[in-house]
Length: 210
Ligand code: SF4
Ligand code: SF4
Image (cartoon, rainbow, N blue to C red; front, side, top):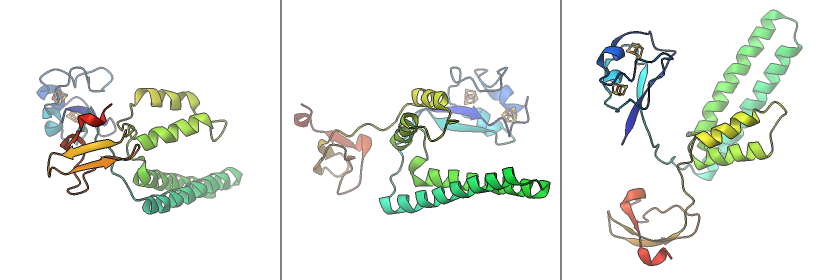
């Protein structure tokens, strides 16, 4: 898997080991963002960093794991309640003239937001590259939830982050792991019914391509 280094600026203590070990100078930039064009993915900077500020991430993310519909529905319902709580806490902060209560309500709103975000990731929106996330963005762009919704940013995100899931065409496949042949419907993901192999382990049979 092709990797590249990214730096978490919040953890970086600046001007230390990665600058010395990087063979290409990719870590030594004016804005502290590792230069993706120079990075070869060797990982030396991540191993050397004393703050754990550098992570190696893949260029192409694997397709997101599927959740069962019932689990997804329960998680998303919980996320909605957290989001409602956040809104209520923000309103309470807005309407209060007591500084202590204001502060407490803002802290609660923040905590509800963080839990809701985590739940959304668990509920099928882990990767911005996933089809789920793309479909959600398209829905929000078509029908913005509020006047303050950042429409331009949402459109830009959709343009910059490419979807890593293809529409499944359906057809006949042969599994190269257990040699089972099977068929899928249009829109159905190809997974071997015998050994659960998928992706590159499956060969799409030619007579189905026309
Ligand atoms: S992974 Fe290697 S090439 Fe890339 S920034 Fe780190 S040290 Fe430099
Ligand atoms: S080694 Fe880590 S802490 Fe030091 S400059 Fe590089 S990223 Fe920052």
